[in-house]
Image 1 (cartoon, rainbow, N blue to C red):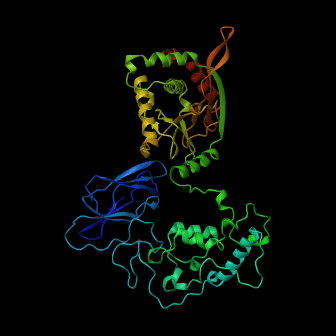
Image 2: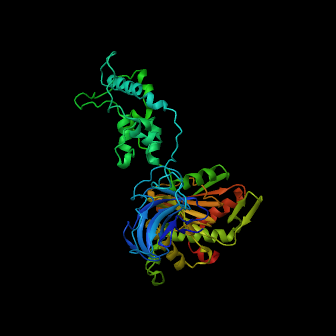
Image 3: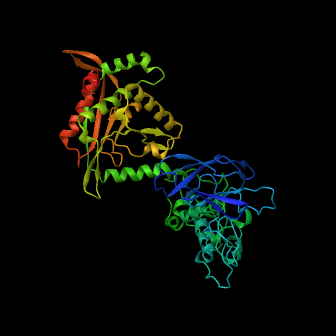
Length: 490
């Protein structure tokens, strides 16, 4: 996809690229430049988060930043211009930027070329076209006094007072002229998040007094319109009495809003939710469990930490568990497959891209080690260390999370005994590893303290039957109990 356009010989625009595999949008996490900054070809100008990962975007030309089209925290569709660059600074007076780095006012869609006749450029695109057509009066504007009276009655009821029947209810602000919220009788100016807030609170933007620059309605303006007449702290009741039916006439979200926090679902979290729902209701999951004595594995880990061949790499139980799963897949290759619904085929994979579920500040991600089946133990240790470090830094690329065939999720790091993991979409099996704990265990006919853990293997029952799933889980357990089998079975 082309990610830059030329608005003139002097100014060039850079569009949001498709940084993943067919992704349609990305959220701008951070700008590294501001208008007036000099940039060079290849310089990273911002960090964006897609449904799969956080990605840094380099600019493909030299120049001076003329304009940032979207602020941090905005979700932008692929193909939209996000930054304009002056590639010939000093050659003449530059046109004023469409807007500073603020949230864009919702207007007509942006387009290239000259402004349509009779329309004025705003933050993105062009404003309302000049027309002599008269708009119908908004119902909300006419009903504003009634809404204020109802809100005042509600507040009086909450405070234990009775609103005077004859006197009009006090309004939070003087009557709003139509042009205050809606310049020239047109649509009120407000940013998309503000419009959504007003919709959630049941507020008509035409009745809101704007305090933002150029008559733009802010979030504070909407909250002020949603709040009934101010009540001093001394008058505020410590505990509200039973609320009458009048409350049902007020915006529901305005009552008790401090008791809830709403978090937008987007980016990685949104993708996780969609993938897990799709997996849970598409693949018939079966989960089997086994509890195993891993004392010898823990001894092997301690020995490997002292081995000079493992110097410089991190050695932990997960390394041995990963190698055990790879050996079990080698002994039972049919488990390493995928279900092709469109063609009604089972696709057996002759390679293993081993996924490792990683908890990050942006949510759970599953990067995978490509061709893990071909790696030696030191190579696998190095790959695991790099994978974990990259995930913690939030630098995992979309490519690193694509193409996985089987996954390990280590819930034991949280002190959990085990779980019933959900398959990563497109994979046939996932192994959950529980906490390794010292427990009483029958060893050589005597009860002794041993290092014990519980493994759980979930698999897609369309292509992995109970026998195959049991063999894979039993092989992993056998290797962890007797690690020398890594030599004889590998």
